[in-house]
Structure formats: C-alpha cells, structure tokens
Image (cartoon, rainbow, N blue to C red; front, side, top):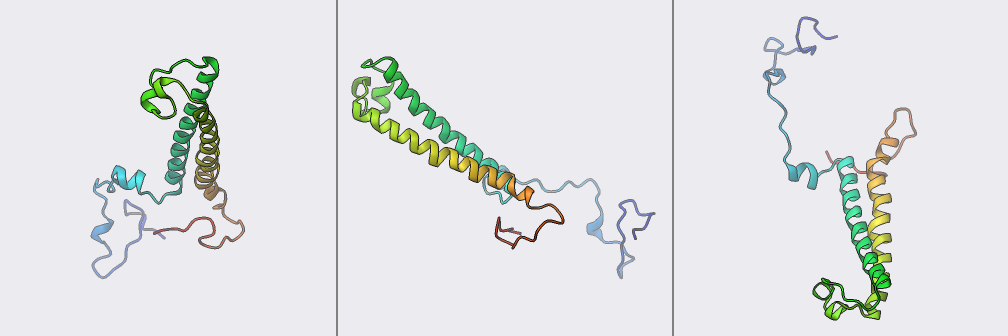
Length: 153
C-alpha cells in the first residue's frame, strides 16, 4: 500500500532511506520524440494506420486525376489540354490525347485505385488503426503474440 504522506503516492523502500533520485519529478517533462522518429519511423499501430491512410488517399487522388483526364477527353474530344503535352509528351503530343494513351489511362486508373488506394486503405489503415484496439479488450480470447502485430519494445 502506498505511503499516504508521500506526494506522488509511490511506496519507496531501499537501503538509502527509501527515496530514489529517479523517482523525483521536479517539473522535468518526458523527452518529446522528434518528428521523424514519431511519425516516419513509428512503431505505434495508430501512427502506422494513419501513414497507410494518408498514402492511400494520395494514390486515390492520383487515380482521380487520371480519370479526370479521361473525362476531359470525353467532354472535349480532340481538343488540346494546356499541360498535356508537357506532362505526357508521348501520350499527348501537342496536348491532344492519343487513343492508346486514353486506353492506358483507364488501365492505370483502375489498377491504382484498387491496388494502391482501396486495398491499403481497408487493410493497412483500418487494419492497423482499429483492429489492434478491437482485439486488446480484457477477458477476450487469447491471441498468440505476433499473429496480429509484433510488439517491438
């Protein structure tokens, strides 16, 4: 049971009067991790889930951009797109989209949206951010260590 006279509520025992210097908390805050260690090289499942989510949303935006090029071609057939010749010199010479490039945009759009957008968003973001919380409740079935996520500590 904790000593009620001690201000931190910790019980201390030891050969040196029962008080250890590392137990003192005199306004020293815990060391804050830097941006790179906290967000880029994180081992926290929530941060990893957010990383998956942000990356998947970036790929979804890229796939959306490809379909918008296709829709521009359908809305204004044969007309030049201002940046088309600069962005895609072989697929859009002088800004006018070639039929082969139109077909490749459709294939790239579908592949990017499914395999680099939707699947990582569902499996990576949802799986890392939410699922460890679901399986961490007390009194639940025992889950072998490393089945869902290996703890690195």
